[in-house]
Amino acid sequence: MLRAYMALVALGIIWGSNFIFMKWATDLISPTQTVFLRVLFGFLPLALMAWRARVLTREQLRHLPHFAVMSVLATTFYYYGFVAGTARLPSSIAGLLSGSIPIFTFICAFLFLRQDRPTGQMAAGVFLGFIGIALSARPWEGADGVALAGVFWMLAGTLSLGVSFVYAQRFLSPLKLAPLALATWQTGLALLTLLILTDFDGMAAITTDSRALWGAVVGLGMLGTGGAFFCYYFIIERLGSVQASGTTYIAPVVAVIIGAVVGEEITTTVILALALILGGVVLIQTGKRRVAPASVQPSAEE
Image 1 (cartoon, rainbow, N blue to C red):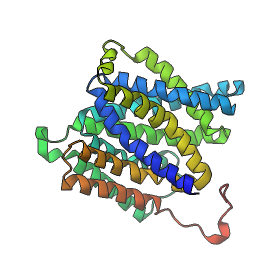
Image 2: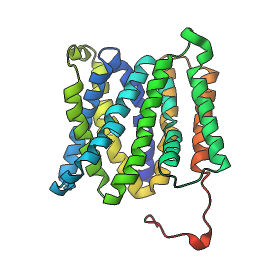
Image 3: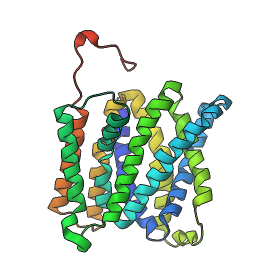
């Protein structure tokens, strides 16, 4: 159990540190090139683990259209939104905005799945989260404030990931595929897409800065993508999906701390925005309607 909690903390640190690696990379190469490197070096360890676990089969090829959709929603566009946003924002602001992922996931699930009617507490959580997002953007500062284009790209990536959760629950969960197989398929297809879309001209510039190069290859790719998937599956297996969501609270805090360490200005407004976003997530995740004991069915985790 201790190893599972250590993995949870490690995953939060890995995801929280991704934003400074994105920042370093996009100072030298384009967002698309950065995403390509991340997906390439994230796919390699995933493919190796999938091959060793023998979770990929020919029968899965019939689900290729679903894998393709997931590759766009949960990899290509999601990663691009975060990289393009981080390129325009301080890494600390980008990181705290990533904490809104559960908020947009909840909104997408409500709009498209209609499974749970939101409670007053959940509605309050969404409201608090959006106040936190507004404080992060600081639109009242105008051109001297945070780049709104960066905020919009971050929110676009977050929304894309939220839609991917809904799509996966609707079309892929019934297939009972191994999560590692799905991750490998969607990352592999994303890599093929990026091979077509990426302009590689000038990409060698990242080799002039070893910090940016290793940050993209190891930090974003091997650890931030391949290693993160491995940790996430391990945590879900040992602790369940609810406790695995604890990384949602760790990653934004880590991003803000790293931003402070590298010299970014961390104001009271930033801290308040972080508290509001995470507070909104807590209200949403703890605000579901309680089911009467007589109607509760045993879950797979039990």
